[in-house]
Length: 223
Image (cartoon, rainbow, N blue to C red; front, side, top):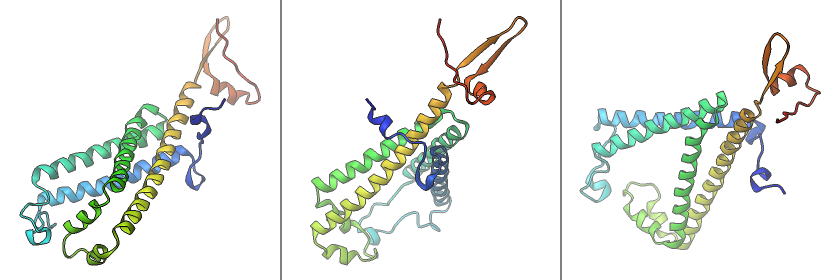
């Protein structure tokens, strides 16, 4: 009987590229995004006036600042950590080290769980959308039009948008998981075979033997 994991296992992803290639592209893309975010945060910390580091009270209708220095430093540290995790996934997929892909896969699961909680909160508490719209600045485009829209239509639109995001994230998770399985399978098939002669002992792998004679099947015997 084929397990569900084996049924959905494939070595190709979108654009007919290999899962290793897809994971490398995904890791580089995440690194670029987090690098841009980190650059903006560091620039805001260096010159808060130029980058509108603090929003005025008239824009928010409150006397609280959007972010203080501590929150900005925490956000910068998170962006730096994400760059490290994405870099590990890219390196692991390129060099075929399965353990390096696990942190990025765990981050994807965590991010998917957070988005799922958002979808559940929209269904359970539909009035939170109207509350969120009321907290937006007055200069936000189409705010009045959104406020005048039926609450049920807003809930359906937001829910459809979140479901599309969840479906796309689930596909990316499957690509990274298939890449992890492929790299793990490649490492486990590197079984060492000892060819002993009277004078020397040569250590070969099954892949090396297949390159010598690709039509021959090599089976490891125990005992």
